[in-house]
Length: 113
Image (cartoon, rainbow, N blue to C red):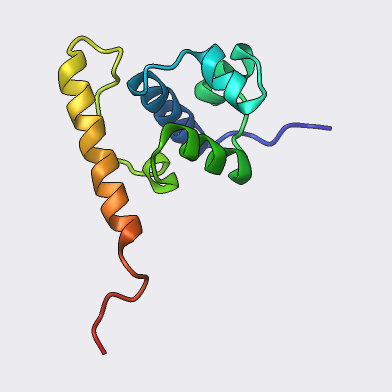
């Protein structure tokens, strides 16, 4: 069986997974244990080598206590928590999570009738 080619969205989701995992203070092994995966499998998800299925993404979001939508947000430049300025990266990523939560809590049709 051949693997489907990964696209930019797959890589974005993997990158966001790494950011959120690090923000939560979890190692790849700890997240893997919670998901029933090895640390290497989590590393492959984060690197975009393996795709993250919708069910697994939902489970990851619950473990990390973030809305699923946060994995698909594409702000201009959200620095990685492993980048030079950890506090700034943390604040930027937390702001992104807050925005995603607000958007997810909004009714689908927010127009008043």
